[in-house]
Length: 78
Image 1: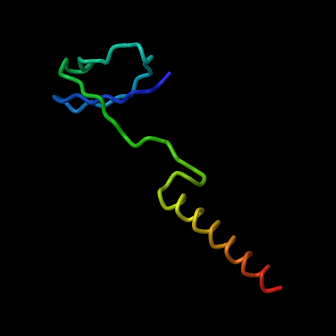
Image 2: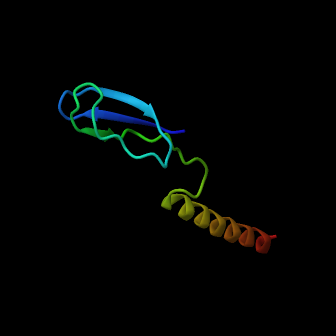
């Protein structure tokens, strides 16, 4: 079950709560009865490995073409 962070716009009371995806968002502060807003933070997602960046695909394709041309030149010299 995900944890959501809320902060009151009136008294700045902040708290975290475990809620299901299907549960409705909280709207009323438990301390003062003011309006609540969800607080969004950094996501814990990392993309590891090759192919996630534009320059990764370009680097691998240029490496393949340069290695095949150098092999062709070496075999014709023998």
